[in-house]
Length: 612
Figure 1 (cartoon, helix red, strand yellow):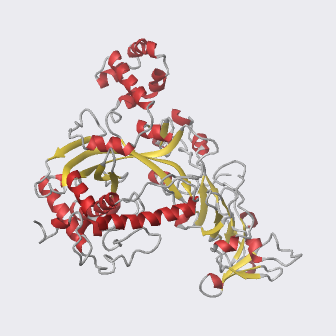
Figure 2 (cartoon, one colour):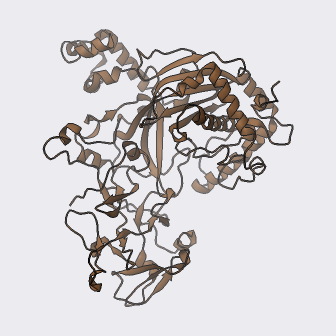
Figure 3 (spheres, helix red, strand yellow):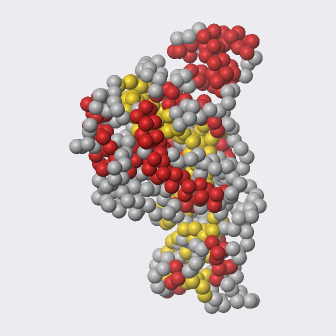
């Protein structure tokens, strides 16, 4: 029987609470914990299935990279249907997890079937008050601990195994007690009321503890399918721990020619036109133009022949090998061409003359007046954050789909390109910067080998160029939040950094959010000549001194595994939703130079009192 649990923001369904994530709801005055179901339930609950659904979007470049035909937005109820009759009762599906629940009053724990319930209600309750002559009932809560493995599997904690019943105990499938007798896990005692077996929860998170436990059960409660074979040993995890669900998101900006409205205007007839024999395509479009496509041709201001030519170009581009999406975006942003918002509704840029005060360090300033970003969820990991290669992703569905869940967000931004000549000279002269980048790179690759094995292909190296541009992006975001009125969590970075045959050295700071902080105009206005000088100078000046110095600048805060050098919350770190790299790979010393040395950062000469 279905139960109404609550509501989620559309953007949260793709990121924080995608399929396989545990969500806490407040339903009927009780706390309900459930795991979001897989993509098959999207088709079942919100037909028509697949890309025939009206709540679909397209981003050809991202589709080509991910090997799908389109994306579906997290489904929402139809407001028209909701106003008629009894309303629209459709909803996404979640399955109760964990299955074990605890009474906060008597401290008993047991599977959900052993607690009292009412038909059609999601809550479960304990009757411990009834025996004491008290009125009311106590709603039981989901237990704190669950089991997970790096392959994404999820299972209930083995409570009866952990307590260690005596031989012949009659309580091997009954109630247990979990009570805190003193602080810490060592004081959290699990006991059996039948055989008086007792064991503390001390050591529950140690890997050695579970080496003698059987291998992972392979359960996937978010999918209605059989368990998988899994050779991993499971690990105990807090139900609300941040490492229980790492969504793997791929994103792309809509850029010309993909950002025009061609596919949107053609709508449901796109697949029909594409699947027609190329030699008959013009004739087929002419036939459609007499009725169903007449309005589309008029809106696009094209003839049937011109429409077919544009479609053929799209098909040709779509069949090309997948290239670096960042390279395509970088070429568009550095092309020097302004785009017109009248002809392209998704991408509009205006080039700004670089002020002479910034010319030694920057070669291009671009106002991104309008942009669209599509973010697609392609899987998730547990325990271990996703790496660059995104290996071992947990599945969102039992069988591969021709689509993935995604959201589209619109915003504005500023693109800054570093002066390639000055950057190359700085990289060649400042050997210390290369040494600092190599230090982080060695630590990153060491962890990568521990995670995936020595024979795995290593990720892309961490370079001084990347560290510099990434840290510069964080400095800009912190300063822009003070000047343009956006909250820090509303700004995002997009890093373009590479050397070699096709070098990139730029950063896009943009707003792409589904709430009110979208396209208010305050961000792109900061690219005006007078404003951008003030912004960049203030951002670099703020990096010269941190309230945690000298500890911060001397890397004392750079704890193992953080992949940070001169960076901390007081100077560089940003909200993790704003950073592409989860607040890793940052070093403000590359911007302003190490303290007390003759070594210079890329922007050292921009600091107050040091300009040449």
